[in-house]
Amino acid sequence: MFVSGVIRILGSLAFFIPYQVLAIEKEPAGDVLRQAAPAVLDTGNTAWMLVSCALVLLMVPGLAMFYGGLTRTRNVLGTMMHSFAAMGIFGVQWVIVGFALAFGTSALIPGVLGWSTDFLFLQGVKPDDLWKDTGVPTYLFAMFQGKFAIITPALIAGAFAERVRFKSYCIFILLWGFLVYDPLAYLVWNENGMLFKEGAIDFAGGTVVHISAGIAGLVAVLLLGPRKGYPHSTMKPNNLTMSMTGSGLLWIGWFGFNAGSAVSADASAVLALTTTQTAAAAGAVGWMLTEMFHYGKASALGLVSGIVAGLVAITPAAGSVTPAWALVFGFGAAVLSYQFVQLKVKMGYDDTLDVFGIHGIGGIFGALLVGLAATDVGGWAQLMVQAKSVLIAITLSGSITAVLVSLIGRTIGFRTSEEDEQVGLDHSQHGEVGYGLTHL
Amino acid sequence: MKLIIAIFKAEKLDEVREALTGKEITRMTLSRVSGHGRARHRTGLFRGREVDIPLMPKIRMEIACNDEFKDEIVNLILHSARTEGDSPGDGKIFVLPLEECTRIRTGETGEEAI
Image 1 (cartoon, each protein chain N blue to C red):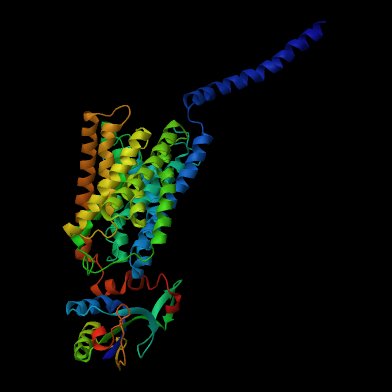
Image 2: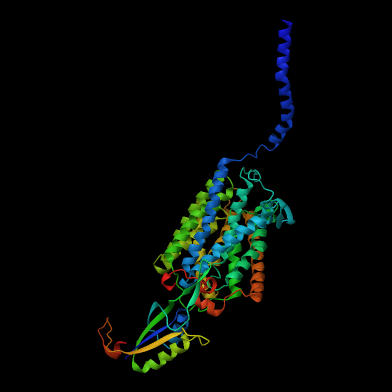
């Protein structure tokens, strides 16, 4: 009786002791887990961001096709190379240092540029580290943002297409990325950024991507001067079918660009997708109708330009307006951009592929209109905040582009020689031809 | 009546056209052709390797005109299609006698129709 009693006590002790030991060990661990409770990888968000990341990259070959088809035959490869080169250059820059500058947690220049040694070469990031409270791995967030860093300088290239040296272009966009894109991304999207703190709405990059690229394009062409023969020579697109295909890819990719900017698979992403779809369609209709009234015909290039204008305008607003407002964004941007493209010819500057007319004007229109149209905060006060962010983007991008273009122009030369321009960039810059294998 | 056939470098097209249209010579037919004369082969890149490009892109321009315009047109093309330096490859101008010319719309023939 006594013996069995002792065994029972010992037995229960035997269960008790390890339990106690485990409990002692577990208690602090449990606390750590509780503190970091939201930081669990959210598979839904992560799945959507993986898709978005790929969609945004799809926009770059889309852009290459869109731009490439619009230039003359002799420049088709040179123009497509501008987009593809950006994929290479910023794919590298972003991993080395770009992400650290734009999304670093401490400040290199307070409010303007960030820094995190962990993000240098992404060395301090582990695959299961999560970005803030998104439930999405930091790697994925960094890769997603890196796609934006690629497409922004690639957009600029459309303005000075058909007349710049490839080497100078590469140097230009690399410096531009450091001096314009990274600070702007920090200003607007980093929680320590000056404009972020003031509450400027830029859901997916109206100021950071489109206004900055549009203004850079305008300033660059004003400094570089028009192509030889512009505007009296006809400069016909070499392949509009390719441009239409490319703009289709842009539309598709834009779902990742805008709806992905929610950084979660939630209602905000769904709203962004809805407004993006609506604005693109409204842009197409807007441009078609305007052309019908002016010329009696709706052109293929016009329609796809309308799509892009609509997509640009909704970009800053995608997560904060209603679908009905999205119609206004798309339609309004198409009509406005159309007017500016007409005006360009009268003003005599040679923005080859209307980067300013579409991305600059559409971007400014969208960034300002969202100040009034935003569902919760829209009003005059918000409009003022938006106007300030637009002005800062214009000033930053415009001034630095001017400095870079003239600096490169005076040192290694930005434009090709007149002869190289006549021969075409494909042969003079790359030693290749885009079409016509009979010549090989 | 003469038929002038000029074959010259593709990159000179804009200059030649501007020179001709500047003198009110606006009727011409153009085609893209490939060929080679005495010019050295141009080289291009194929996956990092230099390759010869034996056939070079040229423009073939045809202009039918009345006899008195022949010299002016030949001169304009000659001066606008010529490149600096002395390397071969600028192309050639041929002048052929033209037997008959009929405008399809009206049925006019001869010097009136050109």
